[in-house]
Image (cartoon, each protein chain N blue to C red):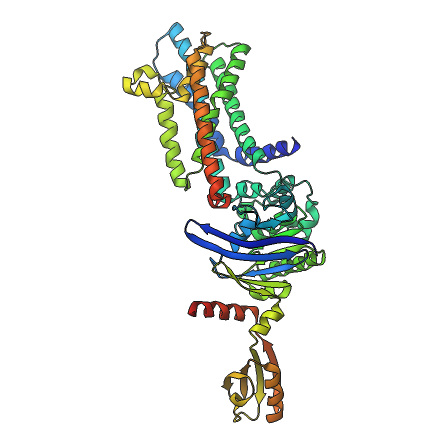
Length: 295
Length: 254
């Protein structure tokens, strides 16, 4: 598989403030990376280094060359956190100006249609809501027909419908084999699309792998039941770490969901309304960040 | 070239055509000053008055250039940088070169418009006569004489806040215009202030325009003065840009 990004032992500091500490990373074509971390973890700094906006040494390669090379600029589309809200400029004029900057830009019309911007095309950028402006910024990132997309908090300010359109388009881009690095605080959205999750905490990668691998590491499962045998001591079951009861409703948290469930059905067969939930990315994230703080 | 033309059209639309206040300050204010001063100030009669009408036209052209460069360029670059436009352009294959040239071209174009407006006023309101050769010469002086001011505007765009820039623009533009004799004759000022005024780039440019209007021989000291200012401002700009690159673009652009 073609390697798009390669980072070996990357360090970066602002003065004495060490932001990135010895990072190693390799990203192949078609991967969708969910880059997750608290505010100030170093996500934006890492993206800025990959975009060539911050200096790096020979240890960072993007499309086989240095970050910010002409080749990289042609192949990267980015949707950074700040939107380009220029005064006295309409959406269409702005996007045409963006397209001018690339030799390989794609026609504007299909993008306007896909992002539901057609009826807004003559509006001034200053008049747009935060969510609508974010869609314009997404259109800006797509105009160069990029092979690699950096999406930094892409759905901030978007309403539910706009977010739905956005993730549908991401799905479409994935099918086209585009590579993407996405940072977002909406972790439930990232877990739907990311082929690999990377946790960045205080400049270090504390996890790199698939969501399943992450869930296996944090394998707490919640089994919710309606139990006739509510007097039963569920805490005795294999792997159980916590039991919460509310009348006949019982929530059992286990580190070995399968075994707990098997034993439960043997010990207390008259349970109903069984639901089994694995840890969500958001819960794991909260758990990991809390653990790190406590350490 | 097509990319540059598109960039220029885009910038003219947003900065000039849809920005009335910018037009007012760069074109109408100097024109208003010209009418006010040539019609209100008592500067004598006959040849003296004719000479004043001519030289004051030149001063107001230079003044328009100062406003366009120091207030216009600095404000536009600062605003675009704050909004992330320059950062975005640096991430594209085309880069930000076309953008900067376009902003500078607009500043010079507006200064040429000021020349036309002031020329029309001088000709039809004050009956000033000038030849095509004089106009061509003034054009050349504007083009070269505005370089240090444009570079000054570029440097000033690095001020951290819009408020600081606004205060600094006013503190530089008006004293620069007054001390170098653009508003009223430099000879009316105290000698120590004259000494300062006579080394300013606007003084050299104003002198060259004045001598062109009066058909006098150009003074080489004025030409050298402008060249020296160009060299100084280019050197400072290069140092600042290199320091920014070392720090990292996104830090200075953010």
